[in-house]
Amino acid sequence: MADTATNAAPAQSQADLDRITDELVVQFKTVFDPEIPVDIYELGLIYKVDIDEEGHVDIDMTLTAPGCPVAGEMPGWVEAAALKVSGVKSAKVKLVFDPPWTPARMSDEAKLELNML
Image 1 (tube, helix red, strand yellow):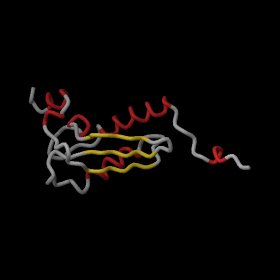
Image 2: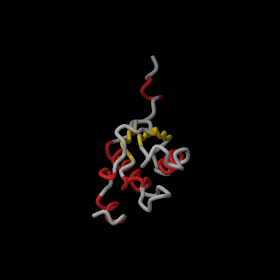
Image 3: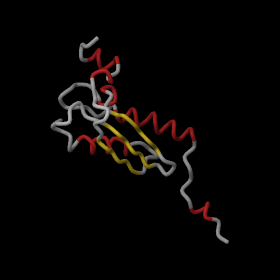
Image 4: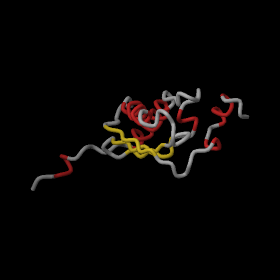
């Protein structure tokens, strides 16, 4: 009987997952909302990131407003940024609007950049 485990993709180690997570944050910080001079990570637009053992990344994110002019483009920018990380085989962004984004989700760094502190 064949061992099916040898045909399966190798599982990511915890160290690999930690590295991928850290590098995803770095890449998310390269994506900016064109109307606000702060990256999407510091704005608090990334709600959830799930990385599976095969290197697929599912990202839930929101926009500062549902009518954002780049709503159709920004998910692609975020997917492209995620794919730059070694170990990420695929990435899919899902736009969510619940809970709605508010400035309270912004980091102190973003608030400082926007003179909100």
